[in-house]
Length: 347
Image 1 (cartoon, rainbow, N blue to C red):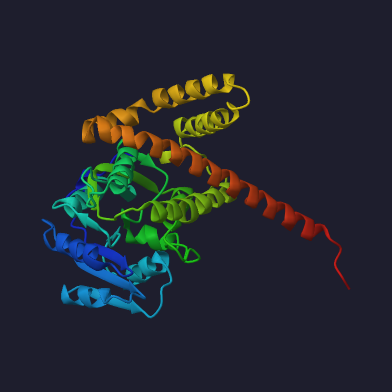
Image 2 (cartoon, rainbow, N blue to C red):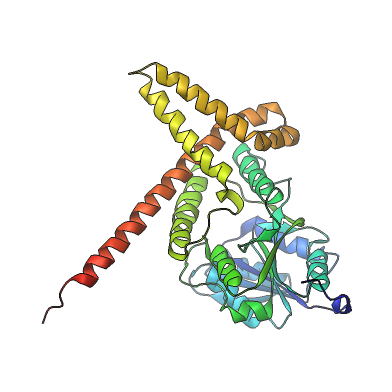
């Protein structure tokens, strides 16, 4: 349905909602960026989720509205609380470790003004991550790339840079507070929005800068335990198609080739022919992911790209393993539930 031009100039109030737990210097930079925005938000609501480093005090010093929890309950609960306190038309959720661009909020307002049927939108990380170590640069740039090449017709929401009409947010019940860690509560909200018939758009020009410094342990813990495993359960429990963002067919094929290459490298000690198969699989990985590697080559040069390739293949391995494990656990629970339901009741 086309947008109604008669609504194009209607002013929309915007609340920026930021959950924070021990935000540190990144949180200060987040609040600084909001101050420098060309379009000032009508409300800035910070929900301190049981922080112990005085983040709530920092937020008060910046003049924001602050709600404090005594103990951590997760960003889903914190965002819902921020939404309850807001009286604005639009709820713009960001993480405490991102900074908005000068015109980010203005672009969000324009997007909703120009399309009255738009219920929610998500943005993208920019291509200049805040932390300068290799892993942070790689992971945040990869996130940027994934959004930039994905369809604008989105089926998920994103809590790091996502805006939604307040009426739509309340109509579907907000975030699911059973998620007590920062994991897939935003994706799950997006699925419910789509099932309810709402439109979500990926606006690639609306960008924020991610300041998080990733280290190997923190990255693997987040991607396996807070992302891959709960996302697997969500996909299976709701019969979601695996065709959005980093679940497309290219990634699925890459997972298969990665395991083939690893298995043949290990088995080559018994049958050297398998090493040839391994090389063929790795060449296949390079070919089908050439767009990714060309992107990194343009952004950071050849040496950086050479460092990216093994991490990228490792990502396919641990992501595929997590999905397989999550699927096995989910099916086992289904089977156990079925068996329990068929047992005769004890008198």
